[in-house]
Amino acid sequence: MDSQRTSILERDRGLVGNADRGGRRQVTLLSQERWDELMRRVGADLGPEARRANIVLSGIDLENTRGRTLQIGECRLRICGETRPCELMEEAATGLQAAMLEHWGGGAFAEVLDGGEIKVGDAIRFG
Image (cartoon, rainbow, N blue to C red; front, side, top):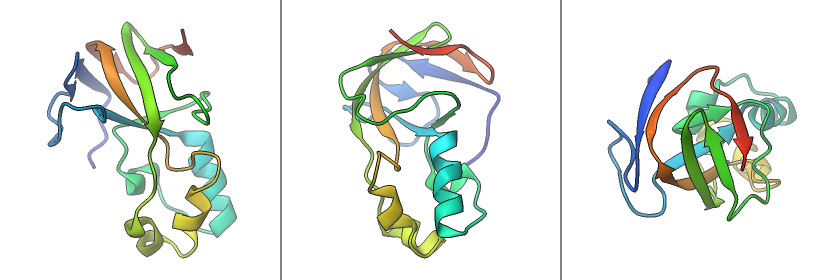
């Protein structure tokens, strides 16, 4: 995954430039704080890019947010569910896949309701 400072979200499609667009899983989200907690728990030092989420958020807890609307800058996303970890997480660090099964550690997936540009530092809140 390549880190970007700005990206474009397209309504009903997801992240422009992403290989898999459309459907209910248009964007994947990961909490930086939850990722840091997981790294401490399994004794690993991997960056969040190892999870391969589209957007890494700070200051937002994604646990049990299904159905809620998240605003990032001017864009709005509807959280559709929890992103479950696959066996690649276990290959990345021993114990990581199991640890991610708790508290929505794998993050969430969402649909784009209102698209536009998002950038590092945008305000993030539940609406």
